[in-house]
Each structure stands twice: as C-alpha cells, then as structure tokens.
Image (cartoon, rainbow, N blue to C red):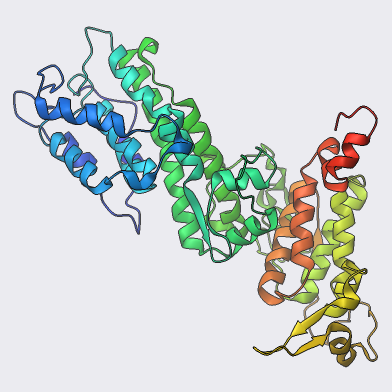
Length: 474
C-alpha cells in the first residue's frame, strides 16, 4: 500500500459520548475478498439491487432544502440498506449518499463517520475503491466527492442543524446565530432570536455538550482538509477535491463554539493551530516578557507569579473589572457605543431592582406591577420598592474589610483583553446575581463593539427615519 503523508489515525479520536456507527473505518478497510479488496463495482456490473437503490435514494434527496420534509425519509431503513450494500462493495458513491442522508436527518455523528471513512478509503484503498479511475483520470470520483459541497444536501442542512439546545428558545442552529448577529437576513416568515437569547443559550449550556459539539465540527474541517490533501497527493491537482463551502462553514462554526468554550473554560479551548484565531502577537506571554500574570489575556498588575490565574471571584472584583473595561473604551475607543452601555451598566450595578426599572424605563415604571401567586393579586412596583427605598442612596464602592485580600487590579492593554474581561463580568453576574441588568447591558455592548458606524445607525433609528434621511443610503 502506498504510504501517505497523512496519518489518518489522527482524524479518528475516540469521543467520550459518541456512538460508533456501523459504517466505520476498520470495517470499510477490511478486504471484501483476496482478489478484490473493495469488491466488484456494482454499477459497472449492472447489479439490480445497487442500481435500483441508488436511483431511488437520489430521488429522496431534495432539490430544494426549504421544501424538504425530514419526516419523509425512513433513515433507519436507508442506512441499513446502504450498510448491506457496503458489505459487498467499497463504494464512495454509497458513502456520499450515507453522509447526505445523515446530515439531512440531523445525525451529525453519522455524517462525521462517513467523512472519516471516505478519508480512510482514499488513503488506504486509493486504487481499489469505487468508482475507480481510468489510468490517471479520476473525474468520476471527483464528481462523486464534490457532491458533498451541494447546497440543499449538505451546506443548508449544516446551517440549520442544532448546535445548542436552550430551555428558553429550544434548539438553535448556526443560521439562527447568523441572523441574530445581522450577518445574514432572515427569510420571510423565519422567526428571529434576539442576540441576547443566543448569548444566554451558549453561556448556560452544559460545557461538556458544547465541547462535544465543537469537536464534531472540527472533525468535519479535518476530514475536508484530508480529502483535499489526499486527492492532490495521490491523483495530482487535476483530480483535486476541494470542499470549499462545507469546510468554510464547519470552520466558522468550530471557531464560534470554541469562542464560548474559551469564555467558559480557557483550558478547554482549541490551540491556535487547531482553529482558534491567532493574533500572531506573543507579547502577551508573561513567561516570555516578564509581564504581569494573566487570565485569558487580561493582564493583572502585581500578579504573584508568571502564569498565575486571576479571575472575578466576588461582586467587588466584578465591578472593578467592569470599570477597567469601560476605562479602556474611554481611553482608546471613545466613539464606540459600547462605552455608553458599559457606563450605564456601572450606574445601575448598585441600584435596587425598582430603581433600575425607573432608570431604564422611566415612562413605564409607574405602571409596573408584580402578580403574587395564582390569584389576581398584584402589587405596584412603587409600593414594593418602598421597603428598600427608605434610606437608600447609591454608595461608593465599600472599602475591603481589614485583613481581606485587596484583589487584582485589572490592566487592559487592548480590545481583546477588554472583551475577555467583559465576558468574565457577564458570567459572574449571570451566576451570582441573575436579576441584575448588568449582563444584558454587557452582552449588547459586546455586540455593538464589533459594528461599523453605518450599521450602528440601524440600532439608533427606525427604518422610517433612516429612509427619510438625506441620501437614503443607510
């Protein structure tokens, strides 16, 4: 067998909670017979079972994804039929069908399994696996594999496949995240989820499940890269299979999910070499420069030693971290609307609930009330607030108790540091003080911090007002 520069075993880690599909690498590479390791080409042989099934299965694949009803396919039966045919032949056409049916049925495990078996087949059975080449011409094989980049069968199903499940909003896919972020427009009649709800879903999701989902999309990226490299290595550039759209989408989802993993547990994030964006700046490395210790790139002045972990441990440190991030925007990005929201978050951070409502909704606060129990009893918010309002006034940050540790002084050196610090503050308040308006304001500030001036106008003016503006170019 021809040696490969690719160690395909690296692509097939044993995932902790993953089920092994019947289509797997070991079974596929096992010879069908001594004379024909990959068995006969059932298409060339005119095998009735193969011909009838592939014709019928192609008819199951939707021409339009949006008109497709997932319930119209008996996936268990289809997988069983393909697995039976693969006992007789090792055929990439069947694997591509298997992969498409899997992702149409939102079975990401089977989809990843199929891609990895394709990689193993190209690496270990290049000459024998069907459809075979004619001399150095593998155009039929190239066309078979390139079909994995089809929009209705792969790209759109990947967009809509759930990447997180929220108790509040239900399952959310990559498309919902893109629509909420304003990256793509919603289709007519498509429900839109607010960016804040998206943020909460990923911050509240079980971390192991989030990591597992990220790793599955990373498997897709790795498989696409391996298919690209192997088809060039073994078939030259004329026979290259470049799954550009599938790889790009899987890479985006991997990086997106890894961003939330890093915010929840920096030690569980992928290394820059595995897909996490790399700033290319090693100056943040405290061990290399003697800089202060850091947490997630946020420098902590006076850290006890290089590499020491600093975090937001209590309300006092959370407010100091919020102030440090706001100060960064004040100094370096004074035109950013994020600064407005961060200062507003500081203002309401020490206010009682009723006062926050009056601050945020001054025209409606007097009409606010709270229902009590299952009856019609309701108490006006103004009356409820009297119990906490007496003698209340905003107080300066309290001095630490004698003998208590002073806590870290957060020094923010760049925008990345500021955003990571805001993540820590947001997570602290969501956990320790869920009724606070601070995490909501921070989430919106983070979103606005990434936007350009023209797109920001749509957040500050209604569509009617924008259309009436001179030039009508907003």
